[in-house]
Length: 537
Image (cartoon, rainbow, N blue to C red):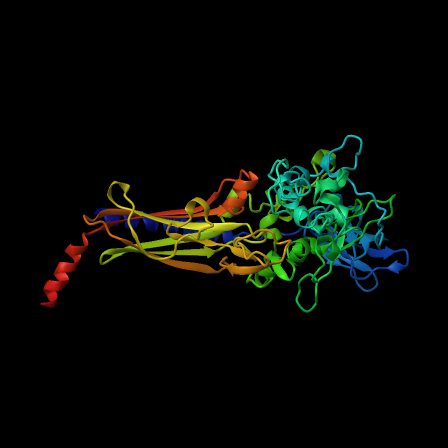
């Protein structure tokens, strides 16, 4: 028997066994839910509550109370004590322990505080020994949040170098800066960078004067007091001139009461459910805003106009992706075990996250010889960002460079194709291009600028939208002697324009997002050309 026949016979035997195993698997009876049931009524102080969600705590097994408040929850494990919870809009969840099958159960709901108390003292997120209710004592989210951009937004030295017009150490004046251009005013920066301070003083909260909890930036207690966001019915966007905290409806309870919103409807400790926390609209107030009529932060609109909403993909899918942890309160602090896929992380990766950036786009490179040239086509596709890349802060940009080298790694001469613009730092003038929203200062005509607190216009916008692609074509002269040619395309991300970074002392190295090398053998151009002449004679 030859090798091919032996291989075919072996595949047939293995295939037969796999088929038998598959049949045996499919023939087994499907796993059944528990046969236990619990029935009862959901009530409040005024009587039955219709439409309440009743569930087996920490599971997806749920039902809804009828018009008369009654419910029957099935599929419960028999003989095992379980907790059944009830929740409805404007109430705290309620829970009772039951042993299926059991009837006559009463779930009593209590309204949580409504309205906003401006005298409410914000709770710290830090694990302060003198404040036992600080989130850092119990929450898995604390170590994830404390070092991310939201946790650092009240102390970020790069922000303050632009706000005050200084270097990153704050010791030398480096124009421009908001406080240099508008001395004596606070601006509206705090509405997003320090919303706890700006909640009641949106245009007078001074970033240089943050104290206590206010300096914790976008902290736990603030986000979990947001009851709703104000969006225009006509556009689905925040209203103009309503940045950050201004577009958020807060529900701060009476001073002697603790009340939070969260993403679960079965937490029976001072937390009520808010579907909005799972929606991109929750992010809109701080990630969609214009200055002087020029749109600057646009990641929410970019998402809204992308294919992602129709696919049900929210901002949280990438920026709060589960990490596999199956509790959000540490078990030693009373945390319950849940499906890890249901627990959002608070890592909230963004422009500083190398892994996120490297998973954002794909790049393909095609290189071939055409006569006396090496022609190169580069396609960059935004495959995994639900918004443009890059997005939001207009200093962010990507730079694509193409190098082509022949024998002894000598660079080939570029014959055609774009080059990196003059503001591209060390890459300026190289074969390639840049992707950025470029602002031009209205007063001076200077571009690019990042001083959007002054009047600025969008001079150009070459960023790549969600699911969109950019194609660029280049040509290089072939080496006279032919031989191997290596073409390398590199895409790097830079946090701010190089001249600004250098002047302010930002030590933020580029992040290499993609690198694709291609090697081809090039024949001398005359060797290709002469046979063609012979054929034509």
